[in-house]
Image (cartoon, rainbow, N blue to C red; front, top):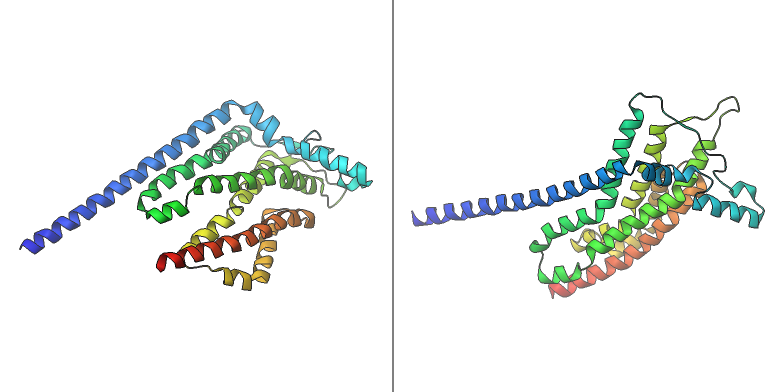
Length: 277
């Protein structure tokens, strides 16, 4: 009888522990959602800045990347390098199109800007479950993850987005067809390419955790370099327009990150082996 009561008390304690953890997770999710919501409101209010100087800027001749390419075109006497000198014409064909786009862009900006805080909230939830050595090895994880994401977003915004706009916005099957780009199509292309590149730049973090749990090893990554190279090219083709130059620009940093990830995996495996001894 006493043994049954003890088992029952243990089960009740485990249930309470589960619900307390669930409640704690709910708190982190709520704080993350509130941060996104507040930043989205800020982005909604700052409509002119967000659209005129951020979202729509890469298609304009004054954008820093476009000016840099035109300067390079003058130096190399290669006019083809000068991009986005005739801005693409953006049109809206839906009654509520601009309002819905305004809301969508505000939410996307909220998520991107709040990304480091969201990572911090999830880190605070996970951290108590880690061993002291794991905590020490994971020190700076939020900073590095945020830095990689922001680097990917900036890389895509300042380089891939202008090239994408120039290629797709000026591409014509015939001179009889004029390009008039729908607002939603433009916004979707720029935001998705930018956000996707930010996520892809998290490769070293993914490799770190897969190596930590023993799924990935540096030997496996070295052995499958050719396969990884093909996958990187395929991934570059997915998140960029069908332009070889853009694909190369994305593929190079991704392959560099892959090589860095091999070193990270090697270090993680070595630490794991030392812990097991």
